[in-house]
Picture 1 (tube, helix red, strand yellow):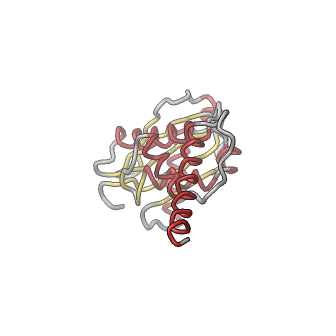
Picture 2 (cartoon, helix red, strand yellow; picture 1 turned 90 degrees about the vertical axis):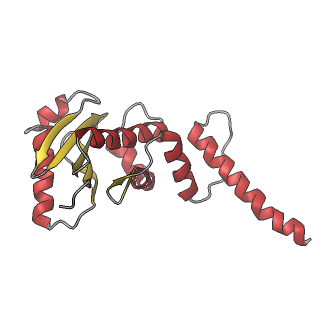
Picture 3 (cartoon, one colour; picture 1 turned 180 degrees about the vertical axis):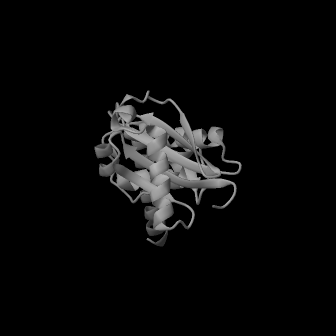
Length: 189
């Protein structure tokens, strides 16, 4: 493993089904299986232990010379494996930023696998913004939301009355894109 980075991230259900998984180093399939097994051991040897894990409590463990952090949130378990400067505290910050961004973007009462699967593109974008190639990127929710809004395709604006701040930001971006597109037409006419 390389030194000083997040080596792997995973999101699983409390029953152990993988929702999202990302390896930032070149691991063999055998090493990936060992990491998955280490994640399972940190969460608890049985699905009953994982189901009983306290919401937003940090569970820590080790894998070879790396550290593992697991944070349960809703029906999901969020895992990170890091080495070097990425101690338990840094890995907790990475996972907390990802969880906070998901809660803000999805506005759901609880994070579930169905919610993440139905918004998989956003799930991937959030992870990419927080953890860029295994190194810590953006951690505050507003910066993450702005970065995601810049990368999402255009969607027509929805009615303003019941929209979240993230939805309002997306619609204001689409309106500014429309205005910029109209300006060259007006100048040429």
